[in-house]
Image (cartoon, rainbow, N blue to C red; front, side, top):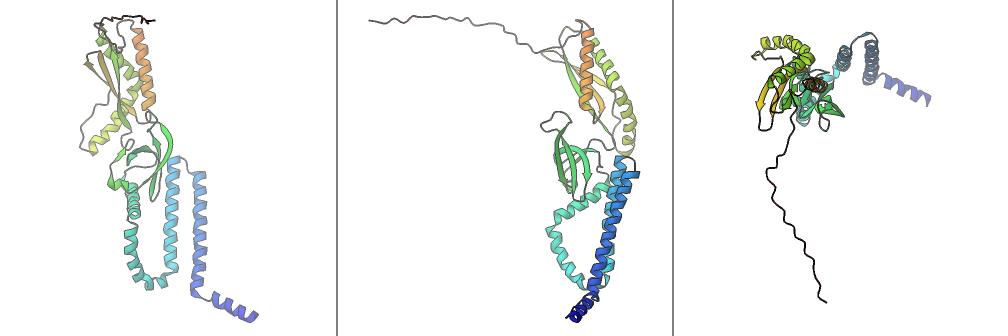
Length: 308
Protein backbone atom coordinates (compact mmCIF):
# COMPACT_ATOMS: atom_id res chain seq x y z
CA UNK A 1 0.00 0.00 0.00
CA UNK A 2 2.73 2.45 0.97
CA UNK A 3 4.69 1.45 -2.11
CA UNK A 4 1.69 2.25 -4.34
CA UNK A 5 1.23 5.69 -2.70
CA UNK A 6 4.92 6.50 -3.08
CA UNK A 7 4.81 5.42 -6.71
CA UNK A 8 1.73 7.59 -7.33
CA UNK A 9 3.38 10.62 -5.72
CA UNK A 10 6.55 10.05 -7.73
CA UNK A 11 4.53 9.79 -10.93
CA UNK A 12 2.58 12.92 -10.07
CA UNK A 13 5.70 14.91 -9.22
CA UNK A 14 7.51 13.77 -12.34
CA UNK A 15 4.63 14.97 -14.55
CA UNK A 16 5.93 17.98 -16.56
CA UNK A 17 2.53 19.68 -16.42
CA UNK A 18 2.48 19.54 -12.63
CA UNK A 19 5.98 20.95 -12.47
CA UNK A 20 5.05 23.77 -14.78
CA UNK A 21 1.96 24.61 -12.72
CA UNK A 22 4.03 24.64 -9.54
CA UNK A 23 6.62 26.92 -11.13
CA UNK A 24 3.82 29.19 -12.39
CA UNK A 25 2.20 29.49 -8.96
CA UNK A 26 5.51 30.23 -7.23
CA UNK A 27 6.48 32.75 -9.87
CA UNK A 28 3.13 34.59 -9.74
CA UNK A 29 3.30 34.76 -5.95
CA UNK A 30 6.80 36.21 -6.19
CA UNK A 31 5.64 38.81 -8.72
CA UNK A 32 2.66 39.78 -6.54
CA UNK A 33 4.94 40.12 -3.51
CA UNK A 34 7.37 42.30 -5.47
CA UNK A 35 4.52 44.58 -6.65
CA UNK A 36 3.24 44.98 -3.08
CA UNK A 37 6.71 45.82 -1.77
CA UNK A 38 7.17 48.40 -4.53
CA UNK A 39 3.80 49.95 -3.65
CA UNK A 40 4.87 50.33 -0.03
CA UNK A 41 8.16 51.85 -1.09
CA UNK A 42 6.41 54.37 -3.32
CA UNK A 43 4.03 55.35 -0.53
CA UNK A 44 6.95 55.95 1.79
CA UNK A 45 9.51 57.65 -0.44
CA UNK A 46 7.67 59.33 -3.36
CA UNK A 47 6.42 62.85 -2.70
CA UNK A 48 3.32 64.28 -4.34
CA UNK A 49 -0.06 62.59 -4.63
CA UNK A 50 -0.19 62.74 -8.42
CA UNK A 51 3.32 61.32 -8.91
CA UNK A 52 2.71 58.60 -6.34
CA UNK A 53 -0.57 57.62 -7.98
CA UNK A 54 0.97 57.43 -11.45
CA UNK A 55 3.92 55.38 -10.21
CA UNK A 56 1.59 52.93 -8.42
CA UNK A 57 -0.41 52.51 -11.63
CA UNK A 58 2.76 51.93 -13.62
CA UNK A 59 4.05 49.33 -11.16
CA UNK A 60 0.70 47.50 -11.22
CA UNK A 61 0.64 47.47 -15.02
CA UNK A 62 4.26 46.32 -15.12
CA UNK A 63 3.37 43.48 -12.74
CA UNK A 64 0.60 42.30 -15.07
CA UNK A 65 2.94 42.40 -18.07
CA UNK A 66 5.65 40.46 -16.23
CA UNK A 67 3.09 37.87 -15.08
CA UNK A 68 1.85 37.35 -18.65
CA UNK A 69 5.39 37.07 -20.03
CA UNK A 70 6.37 34.65 -17.26
CA UNK A 71 3.31 32.48 -17.91
CA UNK A 72 4.14 32.41 -21.62
CA UNK A 73 7.69 31.32 -20.92
CA UNK A 74 6.61 28.56 -18.52
CA UNK A 75 4.15 27.07 -21.02
CA UNK A 76 6.15 27.88 -24.16
CA UNK A 77 6.39 24.19 -25.14
CA UNK A 78 2.60 23.83 -25.08
CA UNK A 79 1.56 26.97 -26.94
CA UNK A 80 1.97 25.49 -30.38
CA UNK A 81 -0.77 22.94 -29.88
CA UNK A 82 -3.35 25.46 -28.79
CA UNK A 83 -2.63 28.21 -31.31
CA UNK A 84 -5.39 27.14 -33.67
CA UNK A 85 -7.90 26.76 -30.87
CA UNK A 86 -7.03 30.18 -29.53
CA UNK A 87 -7.42 31.71 -32.98
CA UNK A 88 -10.91 30.25 -33.42
CA UNK A 89 -11.99 31.21 -29.92
CA UNK A 90 -10.44 34.65 -30.24
CA UNK A 91 -12.87 35.73 -32.93
CA UNK A 92 -15.84 34.83 -30.77
CA UNK A 93 -14.35 36.43 -27.70
CA UNK A 94 -13.57 39.62 -29.61
CA UNK A 95 -17.18 39.89 -30.77
CA UNK A 96 -18.62 39.16 -27.33
CA UNK A 97 -16.24 41.52 -25.56
CA UNK A 98 -16.16 44.34 -28.09
CA UNK A 99 -17.22 46.90 -25.48
CA UNK A 100 -14.47 45.70 -23.16
CA UNK A 101 -11.92 45.87 -25.97
CA UNK A 102 -13.10 49.38 -26.85
CA UNK A 103 -12.69 50.39 -23.19
CA UNK A 104 -9.14 49.02 -23.12
CA UNK A 105 -8.38 50.90 -26.34
CA UNK A 106 -9.90 54.01 -24.73
CA UNK A 107 -7.63 53.53 -21.73
CA UNK A 108 -4.58 53.46 -24.02
CA UNK A 109 -5.86 56.58 -25.82
CA UNK A 110 -6.38 58.38 -22.49
CA UNK A 111 -2.86 57.57 -21.30
CA UNK A 112 -1.05 58.51 -24.51
CA UNK A 113 -3.52 60.87 -26.21
CA UNK A 114 -3.68 63.47 -23.46
CA UNK A 115 -7.48 63.45 -23.14
CA UNK A 116 -7.30 63.95 -19.38
CA UNK A 117 -5.40 62.80 -16.30
CA UNK A 118 -6.14 62.19 -12.65
CA UNK A 119 -7.14 65.46 -10.97
CA UNK A 120 -8.62 67.06 -14.10
CA UNK A 121 -12.19 68.36 -14.12
CA UNK A 122 -13.99 66.82 -17.08
CA UNK A 123 -17.40 66.10 -18.53
CA UNK A 124 -17.82 62.58 -19.94
CA UNK A 125 -21.09 61.21 -21.23
CA UNK A 126 -23.04 64.02 -19.60
CA UNK A 127 -21.31 63.46 -16.23
CA UNK A 128 -19.26 66.36 -14.88
CA UNK A 129 -16.72 65.93 -12.11
CA UNK A 130 -13.10 65.48 -11.05
CA UNK A 131 -11.18 62.41 -12.25
CA UNK A 132 -10.04 60.41 -9.21
CA UNK A 133 -8.95 57.20 -10.94
CA UNK A 134 -8.26 55.91 -14.46
CA UNK A 135 -8.64 52.14 -14.68
CA UNK A 136 -8.14 49.81 -17.60
CA UNK A 137 -11.89 49.64 -18.26
CA UNK A 138 -13.42 52.61 -16.47
CA UNK A 139 -12.70 56.16 -15.38
CA UNK A 140 -13.86 57.05 -11.87
CA UNK A 141 -15.24 60.55 -11.39
CA UNK A 142 -16.30 62.44 -8.26
CA UNK A 143 -19.42 64.11 -9.60
CA UNK A 144 -20.25 67.79 -9.24
CA UNK A 145 -23.45 69.70 -9.92
CA UNK A 146 -26.85 68.03 -10.42
CA UNK A 147 -28.91 69.08 -7.37
CA UNK A 148 -25.96 71.08 -5.94
CA UNK A 149 -25.49 74.61 -7.24
CA UNK A 150 -22.24 75.72 -8.87
CA UNK A 151 -19.26 73.39 -9.20
CA UNK A 152 -19.57 71.62 -5.85
CA UNK A 153 -19.31 67.90 -5.11
CA UNK A 154 -22.64 66.14 -4.65
CA UNK A 155 -21.14 63.01 -3.08
CA UNK A 156 -21.71 60.58 -5.96
CA UNK A 157 -18.82 58.57 -7.41
CA UNK A 158 -19.47 57.66 -11.05
CA UNK A 159 -17.61 55.06 -13.09
CA UNK A 160 -17.63 55.71 -16.84
CA UNK A 161 -16.48 53.25 -19.49
CA UNK A 162 -13.31 54.42 -21.24
CA UNK A 163 -14.93 53.70 -24.60
CA UNK A 164 -16.78 57.03 -24.22
CA UNK A 165 -13.71 58.88 -25.50
CA UNK A 166 -14.45 57.43 -28.96
CA UNK A 167 -18.20 58.04 -28.89
CA UNK A 168 -18.84 61.44 -27.31
CA UNK A 169 -17.03 64.74 -26.82
CA UNK A 170 -14.62 64.99 -23.89
CA UNK A 171 -14.80 68.34 -22.07
CA UNK A 172 -11.68 69.11 -20.06
CA UNK A 173 -11.94 72.15 -17.79
CA UNK A 174 -8.40 72.01 -16.50
CA UNK A 175 -6.13 70.49 -19.13
CA UNK A 176 -3.90 72.97 -20.90
CA UNK A 177 -5.84 76.06 -19.81
CA UNK A 178 -7.02 75.76 -16.18
CA UNK A 179 -9.22 78.87 -16.36
CA UNK A 180 -12.82 79.49 -17.39
CA UNK A 181 -14.74 82.61 -18.28
CA UNK A 182 -17.54 83.56 -15.92
CA UNK A 183 -19.80 86.59 -15.55
CA UNK A 184 -22.24 88.29 -13.21
CA UNK A 185 -25.02 90.78 -13.92
CA UNK A 186 -25.81 93.80 -11.73
CA UNK A 187 -29.12 95.72 -12.31
CA UNK A 188 -28.77 99.45 -11.64
CA UNK A 189 -31.82 101.67 -11.43
CA UNK A 190 -32.36 104.56 -13.82
CA UNK A 191 -31.12 107.90 -12.55
CA UNK A 192 -27.90 106.40 -11.20
CA UNK A 193 -24.47 107.54 -12.34
CA UNK A 194 -23.81 104.80 -14.87
CA UNK A 195 -20.20 105.91 -15.43
CA UNK A 196 -19.47 105.54 -11.73
CA UNK A 197 -21.23 102.16 -11.69
CA UNK A 198 -19.05 100.94 -14.54
CA UNK A 199 -15.93 102.23 -12.82
CA UNK A 200 -16.61 100.53 -9.51
CA UNK A 201 -17.23 97.21 -11.29
CA UNK A 202 -13.83 97.53 -12.97
CA UNK A 203 -12.17 98.32 -9.65
CA UNK A 204 -13.77 95.37 -7.90
CA UNK A 205 -12.85 93.02 -10.77
CA UNK A 206 -9.23 94.13 -10.74
CA UNK A 207 -9.08 93.70 -6.98
CA UNK A 208 -10.65 90.21 -6.86
CA UNK A 209 -9.69 88.54 -10.16
CA UNK A 210 -6.83 90.69 -11.43
CA UNK A 211 -4.23 88.02 -10.59
CA UNK A 212 -6.27 85.40 -12.45
CA UNK A 213 -6.22 87.58 -15.55
CA UNK A 214 -2.45 87.91 -15.49
CA UNK A 215 -1.98 84.17 -14.94
CA UNK A 216 -4.48 83.40 -17.70
CA UNK A 217 -2.55 85.56 -20.17
CA UNK A 218 0.58 83.51 -19.57
CA UNK A 219 -1.37 80.24 -19.91
CA UNK A 220 -3.19 81.38 -23.06
CA UNK A 221 -0.03 82.16 -25.02
CA UNK A 222 0.97 78.48 -25.56
CA UNK A 223 -2.61 77.75 -26.67
CA UNK A 224 -2.35 80.29 -29.50
CA UNK A 225 0.94 78.77 -30.65
CA UNK A 226 -0.38 75.20 -30.65
CA UNK A 227 -3.90 75.72 -32.01
CA UNK A 228 -5.50 77.94 -34.61
CA UNK A 229 -7.27 80.19 -32.13
CA UNK A 230 -7.41 83.94 -31.83
CA UNK A 231 -5.90 85.90 -28.99
CA UNK A 232 -8.73 86.17 -26.49
CA UNK A 233 -9.16 88.95 -23.96
CA UNK A 234 -8.66 87.56 -20.47
CA UNK A 235 -8.91 90.91 -18.72
CA UNK A 236 -12.18 91.87 -16.95
CA UNK A 237 -14.74 93.44 -19.25
CA UNK A 238 -17.90 95.41 -18.34
CA UNK A 239 -20.78 95.84 -20.78
CA UNK A 240 -24.04 97.77 -20.34
CA UNK A 241 -27.55 97.19 -21.68
CA UNK A 242 -30.53 99.49 -21.12
CA UNK A 243 -33.67 97.47 -20.51
CA UNK A 244 -37.24 98.56 -19.88
CA UNK A 245 -36.79 98.25 -16.11
CA UNK A 246 -33.15 99.09 -15.33
CA UNK A 247 -29.61 99.47 -16.61
CA UNK A 248 -28.00 96.01 -16.67
CA UNK A 249 -24.25 95.77 -16.25
CA UNK A 250 -22.47 92.49 -17.07
CA UNK A 251 -19.02 91.84 -15.64
CA UNK A 252 -17.10 89.17 -17.55
CA UNK A 253 -13.88 87.81 -16.08
CA UNK A 254 -11.50 84.83 -16.04
CA UNK A 255 -11.25 82.63 -12.96
CA UNK A 256 -9.61 79.35 -12.00
CA UNK A 257 -11.95 76.46 -12.67
CA UNK A 258 -12.01 75.44 -9.00
CA UNK A 259 -12.75 78.93 -7.66
CA UNK A 260 -15.89 79.96 -9.54
CA UNK A 261 -18.30 79.97 -6.61
CA UNK A 262 -16.03 81.59 -4.03
CA UNK A 263 -14.89 84.22 -6.53
CA UNK A 264 -18.45 85.14 -7.45
CA UNK A 265 -19.27 85.52 -3.76
CA UNK A 266 -16.29 87.84 -3.26
CA UNK A 267 -17.22 89.96 -6.27
CA UNK A 268 -20.84 90.41 -5.24
CA UNK A 269 -19.79 91.27 -1.67
CA UNK A 270 -17.35 93.93 -2.84
CA UNK A 271 -19.80 95.35 -5.41
CA UNK A 272 -22.48 95.84 -2.74
CA UNK A 273 -19.96 97.46 -0.41
CA UNK A 274 -18.82 99.87 -3.13
CA UNK A 275 -22.41 100.74 -4.08
CA UNK A 276 -23.21 101.54 -0.45
CA UNK A 277 -20.26 103.94 -0.38
CA UNK A 278 -21.62 105.92 -3.33
CA UNK A 279 -24.61 107.05 -1.32
CA UNK A 280 -27.50 107.69 -3.70
CA UNK A 281 -25.39 108.07 -6.84
CA UNK A 282 -25.66 104.36 -7.70
CA UNK A 283 -28.55 102.17 -6.64
CA UNK A 284 -29.51 98.54 -7.17
CA UNK A 285 -32.70 98.17 -9.17
CA UNK A 286 -35.57 95.92 -8.18
CA UNK A 287 -38.57 94.74 -10.12
CA UNK A 288 -41.61 96.96 -9.50
CA UNK A 289 -45.24 96.68 -10.48
CA UNK A 290 -47.03 99.90 -11.48
CA UNK A 291 -50.84 99.90 -11.24
CA UNK A 292 -52.16 102.65 -13.48
CA UNK A 293 -55.88 102.41 -12.80
CA UNK A 294 -58.03 100.40 -10.46
CA UNK A 295 -61.54 99.51 -11.59
CA UNK A 296 -64.22 100.72 -9.19
CA UNK A 297 -65.77 98.12 -6.99
CA UNK A 298 -69.56 98.25 -6.54
CA UNK A 299 -70.58 96.07 -3.65
CA UNK A 300 -74.22 95.95 -2.62
CA UNK A 301 -75.53 94.01 0.30
CA UNK A 302 -79.13 92.90 0.38
CA UNK A 303 -80.88 91.51 3.38
CA UNK A 304 -83.08 88.62 2.48
CA UNK A 305 -86.58 88.92 3.85
CA UNK A 306 -88.64 85.99 4.80
CA UNK A 307 -92.40 85.88 4.46
CA UNK A 308 -94.16 84.51 7.44
